Image 1: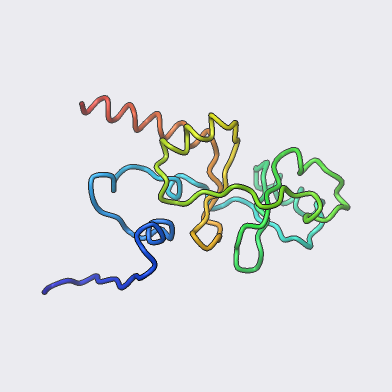
Image 2: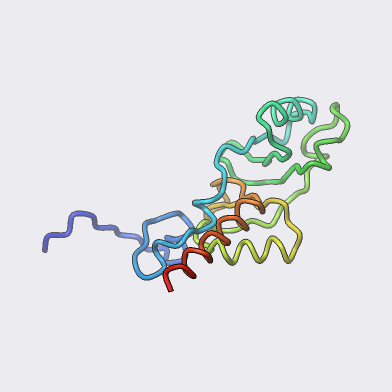
Length: 156
């Protein structure tokens, strides 16, 4: 039949999208959370001390650290407030456990609205099995959504 790329994926369309699989159709070219999220976000482990993460996070120019396990499954989040804690404390005690995560396929306009409405400075983007894709910054989401809105207005 001439098909060169054939996928056998049984988990379903939403899981395919959440895993970052390629998409087609009218919305395929629109930016999504996983494309805008920053994959270079610092990560840390439960058994580290906060002081270890503080230096690494600041040196990288961030004010957040995503707590992950060995498989990069998101367990918690250290935002600016938590990073100011006692350097001797363990990450497990300092982190915000079980942060809300979002899937890579969520349209960036939806994420921008949600982040503004809920005053979220950042949001972890994960696959459907909880593995970290990156951290979406509100400023990036709002800027990208605004650029998309302007581009769509210009082409109308």
